[in-house]
Image (cartoon, rainbow, N blue to C red):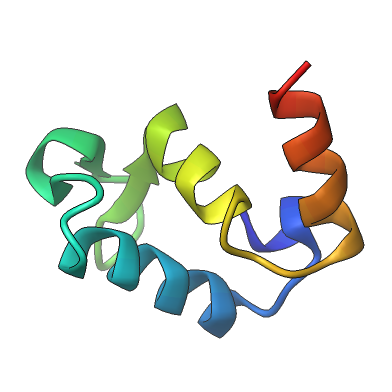
Length: 72
């Protein structure tokens, strides 16, 4: 998502945290932890609902383009 919206990973992480803390989405039903071979910790994979929620929160040119695309 950081690459998609051209924002720092910490910014995206903050938005994801807020999406769940504010009750917009439920973390347990929108996140899956995947265990990757030769990796020490699991990778979190977010579903489309999380990506859309973050897309409406992030402030960037790519975020604006995403919102325009999502509402077509």
